Length: 129
Image 1: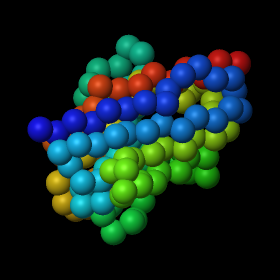
Image 2: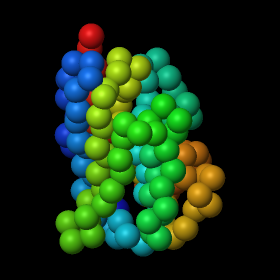
Image 3: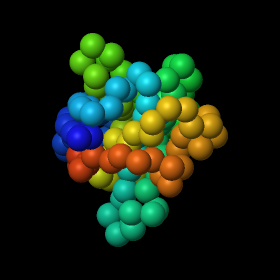
Image 4: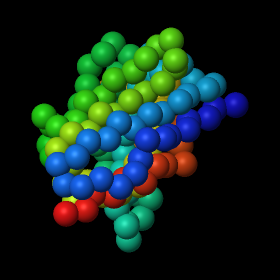
């Protein structure tokens, strides 16, 4: 049974930092294509934005607004995916979801929600000024 459990969300002020975690079971984070998505209030599930993705070979992809501020990584021993978020902005406020796809996705499709088989329940991030 696959389970992805996100944690680490919270409320921070502009410029602050948060690290999100996605503890995985039933999938192996270093053999799956993994990604973080976010869904802003009022948006539908199909409008989730890809924030950062990580392929089994270590290649990453980030949405433009996240480049230079966010880092995606994994701990194979803990079977956990992370998203380190720095210099947070109000527009980063959203529910953040972890997603997994068995094997390799194309690098260009890492940030597209459609292919992903497995999703967590999300963790809320709120950035206030």
